[in-house]
Image (cartoon, rainbow over all chains, first blue to last red; front, top):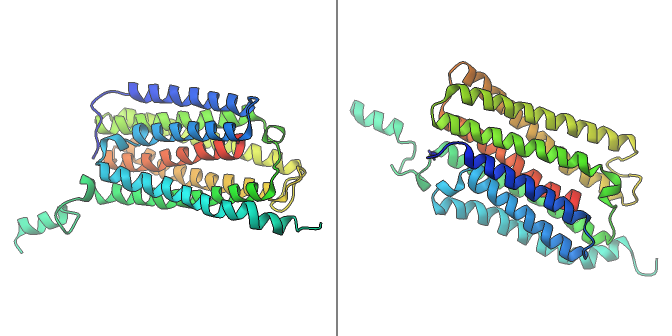
Length: 103
Length: 204
């Protein structure tokens, strides 16, 4: 079992950072930026928040590195691949299905 | 097999005698479940992403949702995660009263989130959104909204149910630190999923 060697202080700090990141992300969502820049920054913000939750609230930093690799690779690499492959089709094939040429 | 050997076998939860990743099988199974459940949500968000790419245009979320309200929902869930982490810390330190207090505060956070989600759904439905149609132009928008937030809401309901069991048991003094930690892993996962739903569905 993973154990903490300190009190709850670190949880309050992580909570504060998560709230700040949330407000920054809302600000970015409203900002006058290009769609790509906005999407990139928001994904970065989501990844930062997810990392804080996984490593501090879920105590992943206290687990063996192998477990972290399994979870992080399993989730993020597979998720990215899942998106990258159909998104390419989505921008080509599906576009033609939804908006057939000549209509 | 003598008695000590039988006892050793019962205590050694892994047949090989060495626990993979130096963790119990219960916690490892929860992590593996989290990966598989994460991929379920990954699939839902990828499907949503592909629909957005395929459609080219998408309703402006700020015109559909009250972003301050969504921010409040996010605040509630993040705060409930703080309480859950504190409950796990209390369980590991052997502070029974902290475990009970923080688990019930987490439950309160979860119920508040569900109440807000019910309000959000009823508002959107009242405005005419359905699974196959909505007033904002792109038919898939309603399907994505109801399916993704609905799946997440179901997970929150499950998490609250698990925490109710943990909360009642801890009030009776019958809890294990690892049991609280494993329940906490699930609850934090629910928060983790919301981080991505909030970013991808409400903001991007």
